[in-house]
Image 1: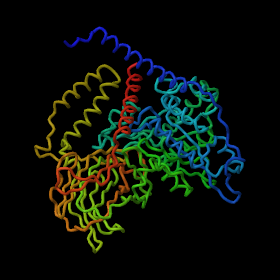
Image 2: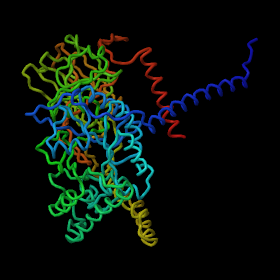
Image 3: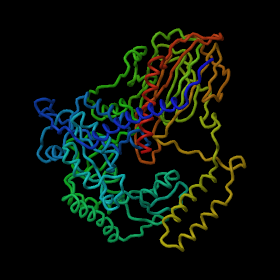
Image 4: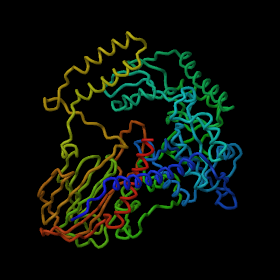
Length: 625
């Protein structure tokens, strides 16, 4: 007779295992916290005898990078610690050394020569998590950075942001210098995309209505405050008094809390070639900036500063959270034309492909294909010249705005082919015959193929009005105003908005530069018939194609063209991402031969899965406790 296991003994075993796991997690977290709080190294300035300096007759200037923020995991705007590490590692291997604010002052005021590859590194917005997660990374590469803060956060005591004591500790650690983004981050002259006037918003209010905004708003110091008709609500003196107040408060708070105002300023957000959207506003800003600061970063989108730049009109590049390392390097190469330490990743996996354009990185089951600026990145699968009837499966996770293509039965010069691509969230199928002329066979928006729920313009406008009215309720100036706004909100919610099914116009959102893409692509090609599915939804079945000759398989990524970006970002480089790329024969057999496979298998998959589970456990522990 089979012996029954003791339930008490089982329970005790589970307790022991759980206790061991908890102790391992706690020890790991303790190490992370100790490394985040304590600095064990000292920043060592670059040594002219050990780095390549710019020649007397050349001016290589310096590049400036400014990260919005850093977190354990990637968000829409915050870069992950792991990706920041990858960026810093590539910059270090490319030969970049960091310079200080004093180096910049000496470069412009004294004509001091800088290292040929000089990097000025910044972290904006003064987030506490940025300091915790970024400092360990920068220390590893002996990189000094400037932490930028808003003076107003010292007053509000917002725990998400660095306080004066934190900043003093960071400065003492020698790896950080201090700068400022100003007194506050607020928005004026705000309209939603339906031209409803929202007025002036703080960051919390802005975040609440942000899904319904386009670009019709401005930063606090950039313009006169205007009414819903665009007419100024301020006289010149009132505008000047308002802007002066911010500079005066900023100077007062920093001086009181830290003993002095930082010497470096980043004006939010100009990018106009002057210091505001309006000439008179610009003049007021300029006078105060010149009075209070020794340098100012005024523009974004270009990394290189040279002697021809003004020390009060410096420019910076803001790497985005979704940029793979070659994306960053491609942007820097385009600005500087200097050599970069491109990232290859797994050389064995990469060895299966010929890199024709752009740069590619192979990481486990992912292929990152970075295009050249305003151009393409192209890979050709080695040994694929005789591919004819095939099945291709892959997950595409590059952003919606851009091009991810698979070319089949292609010739060596990529002049004749069958092409299946996702371009700016559309599936496009085309072919090019011996004449070299491309013919489009099919085009459809992915949302239509995947039967995404349709929202009407009326429904979306109603949602925008509700979001705005919720702000009125939350931030009402008095009880009566709050009650009135609550009644209006209730009426708004009860109001019927016509749906697409009822004949109303469909709302089609503009694709933003950083909108994430993610779809499963299946291609079946056999003789003169092509079938394509997206996320198991059939787009085309047995579509007739004329090119039946065998040929190569190519992957391509491409720039999606000038794009809408609410944050006013510009980017002409794109990362195509092909996950679990697999090619099999399409002969109609029950089990088809695998021609190429970039998936993870066996021990590699198990190791990766264990790592992911460990990360998830750590994240759960941090979020829970």
